[in-house]
Length: 428
Image (cartoon, rainbow, N blue to C red; front, side, top):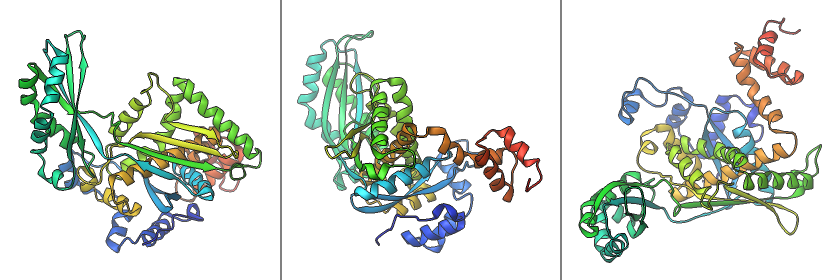
């Protein structure tokens, strides 16, 4: 079914009305509606089977970002996150992007690396060539451990050997298995393959195998997105579109040259990506690790995005980064809301999920840069954060909205001010 990702007046609805709208928009049935509507959607018995020492479950708010159009397809994006302003900023930037055709995305194949570390080798370069001579044998041995993956068209594709001739422990070589993991994240698959060839690698290289494990620097599994904004689209009451574009580019260049700024800049990108990864039951720590390692690939830490001015004056943003996500295995399959999140997005492959995630990250980055280049980050953020402050001050029911209004009108977002407001007569 064709999905309409525009969500007009969505913010003014209550949670039940929003959920009813989303269920109708993406075709969820009554049982799926009930799963999303009730707290504690993850049964304790299921949680107990997922990790050890379970004593309960922990919930995050689950929201949807609207207005996303990716490669011409409308996508409603589930996001599980606790921080205010993230969903609103991503949705607004996606709404503005629709004017110029939304987001364009692409990705490489789902290739992951497994590393096999070999120490105690006296002739590391000779050992490297010996391993490469037996490459086909080792690939066959690795593939013999996962017939299901082979049947799906995946499997070990190649072997690289990296030489470290001078370490404090002597020469070291590291064999990389390059594995097509299809629609899995792939950690268990590549780890098993690495372990399966360890003994034979020792025989060939004449050394001792130590670590046999995947690398989270998934630099062969990249997702990319681009977006374009016209000056007319970006104009505000106080700033021309051209001023906004120049401000965004200056803010980006700050991150490109300064690692202290780049750390916060990239954190803002992950503000958009991580909630999608969490909502779909994927490993957000792996995505974070790969992202930040990839940001240093040129020898210093820098921005994961680029922002530049097109010949016609439009602002053009791009992102490219590792995206090791899956649709099968792990919490993606066992957590009931993770399965619903994938259904809401109507994704058909892990690559498509990765492309959606980086598009959201690019939108989130644009939202932050636009705010920084104009009114500053705190004005909009604190307005949305006001509800958290009101709740923390003890407001309940209708008092929450009343306290929020007082904070916004006074431009005072301190907890002690919220407490003071609560102590006033209701209509003072």
